[in-house]
Amino acid sequence: MIKIKPILDEALLKLKTANIDDIESVRIEYLGKKGKITEMLKNLSELSIEEKKQFGAEINIAKTKLNDTIENKKKDIATKLLEEKMKNEKIDISSSFAFPFSKGHQHIITKTIREISDIFVSLGFDIAEGKEIETDWYNFEALNIPKDHPARDTQDTFYLEGSQNLLRTHTSPGQIHIMEETQPPIRVIVPGRVYRNEATDATHSAIFHQIEGLVVGENITFAELKGTLTLFIHKLFGQEIDLRFRPSHFQFTEPSAEVDIKCVLCGGKGCKVCKGSGWLEVLGCGMVHPNVFKAVKYDSEKYTGYAFGLGVERFAMFKNGIDDMRVLYENDIRVLKQF
Ligand code: PHE
Image (tube, rainbow, N blue to C red; front, top):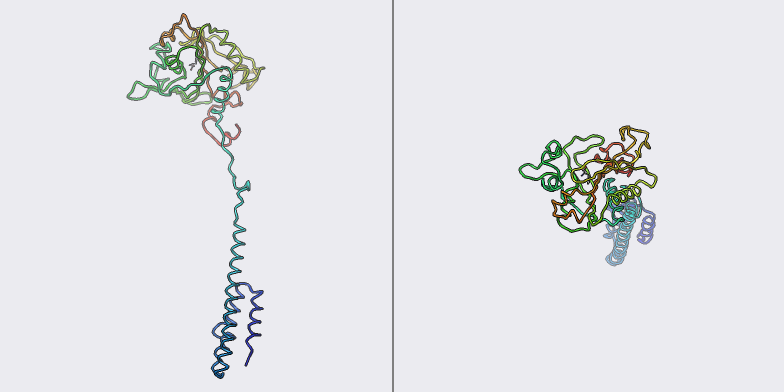
């Protein structure tokens, strides 16, 4: 009679260092159809009833023990493999590689509007919003723009089909809304989008942005206009910037002026952007025309005021050394990243 104990010990020893494939070989070697322990069970028939009972029980215990050990070992290995796998696949959310995208930021036009608005807010101006769809009254009539004025032409203005409405060609109608809704003193800016029927090139766009300014009260003078706008230009471009007020004409202001700054791209020598003049025109302004006050039923004997309007894109370009307006709208990520 062969003893079961040494056979079981031998099998258990082999299992100790076994990998997943070895385990299966051990199982076959001892518990398979022709396995060492299986054979022993087969040989039981040759024993006496007493021996069968005792030896059979021993073999069964050994068999169960080996089986359990094999199953546990398999489980252990499976758990270890899973742990290993999870460790390798673990996502480190604190790693910078988890965020390979660059952060978004405000568009240069938005930034410019905010920068300009901040300066006027620091000078006591409120910020108001106008409407992009306007009527002839707000965009032209109330602003003293005569019926035959070229700006009213469809060549310049987008009229909305089947209605009396149009897309505002400037933010000046904002002046009318404010004066209709409130009484002086008024000190306000109106930033917004405007539309003109014109072809796009390096200095023009059919859709662009303006910031309107309006100040109305008693004893508001041209000197205040000059002082305020000079301060604004200095705050935006620096104290050293050269600027000049040049007489001009607008239907809704009298007298009117335009403000030029020394070309920031060539320093005044003359270049493509300043068209050789050495100066850049940056805003239109003037004292509110009495006819405009009449349109909003203000007493032009009691009140005076000034207005101004500036093109945001031009400021964005001049401040950032951009010589082609189109880059502001193309939204090429390589350009956007620079501002
Ligand atoms: N609305 C004028 C334009 O678009 C600018 C302007 C505004 C001029 C206010 C004077 C006063 O050119």
